[in-house]
Structure formats: structure tokens, C-alpha cells
Image (cartoon, one colour):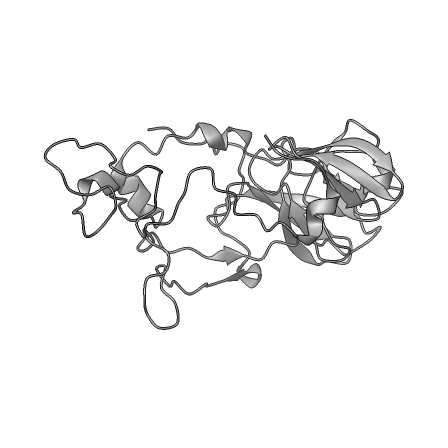
Length: 260
């Protein structure tokens, strides 16, 4: 079992005004039927209202604390604006308490600052990138994530994502400089079943361990072969390599190179 090093974090209690309690549904829909398996239980937690927009342009803010967020893999930072307002933002990798961050067109190219994509030179790493103007950051928000600026061309910025995909985004959209915090998250080993239960994940049973009526792989004496020509889900749907993306999706024309 392994855990993330939390020594960089500085706060134990979140800002009460910026938290809310989200209802638990344990994977059930409005009729009470389980539509998403393996969900339920888990430790109680509060949702932190993170500001992905950062609309206060040219208003410097100071980093007050670096905090853990149970609803996301990255760490978050509480900031204090000069007018006294406090909010949460995604913490970048090298962010420290006392640092200053600012949003605007002519801001310094310093990690944590947020500016228009067209103002950022080729080769820089960015995160929390807007896909549509004013909607707030949507790309590269997970722990250790970043997008690399590859080119600027004809009103668009080309970004290389972690998947290897190269995608065009309007260069009038905002992005934050640097890499998202907690890059070692992918090295964590859960270690035991109980820890998964604390995180709200219920047990997952192998299809080959079920009865024939419960799964296409079920039944047989001892370790039986799959018995079907192609991999299938519990409900008999073909999986493993079948394309699920819509052929006429609106964003197809913005993808320069498909992911690997």
C-alpha cells in the first residue's frame, strides 16, 4: 500500500462558505435502480467549490493555503484577492503559500498565472484550459495533467494532450500556466480492499466467477475459457476495441491528430 506525500499541504479545515454537501446516490437513478455498479458507502466528504473561471481580471491574489480535496486527484489552493474575496483554484505543481497569481492578457509568464492562449509561447505547459469562451477550464484538470502548446495558427492554438491527441482550441480562451499539482498520484497503490470501500467503491466480481445466467463468461468446471468469439459486457454487448465516438461529432474538425 502507498500514499501520496501530503507534507506540502498547509490547511486541515476547508473554508466553510466554499463547501457544500453533495447527496449520495450509490449509483442509483431516480427510480432507485442501480445504473452504475460498484458505487456506495465511503467516508463522508464535503465538496469544495473550485473557481475554474477566475473571472477577476488584473486583480492580484495571494496563495493562503494548499489543501486536499476529496472530490479530485489534484490539490487545491485558497487565494485572497486584494478586495478581500477568497476562493479556491487548482494548485499548480510548484505553487507555494505566499505566491502571487493574477489573471489577464499582459500578465507575466509565471506558473499559476492565467492568460489567453495566444499570449503563451510555443513549448509552454498549461492546464485548466477553456474549450469555450467563458465556460471555465475543462481540459487538463487532473493530478499531474498538462497540455503542451505546439503551434498558433489562424485564430487557433494547437495543444498536445496527455493522450497524444493534438487538438485545436480558440486562442482567445484562457489557460493557466504550469502543470497540475500532485503528479505522483498515478503511483499510489490502494493496497487492500478496505481502502477501496473508504473511497466509495464496492467490490467488482469477475465475469468468469459468475453463473451462466449472470454473465456470458459464467459457468464451467474450474477455470473455463471465455467461450465467446469476442469480449462482451455482462449484458452481452461487444466491447474491447469497438469505437464508441460519434462519427459526426462537432469537435472532429478540431482534432489535428487522434490519440494513440
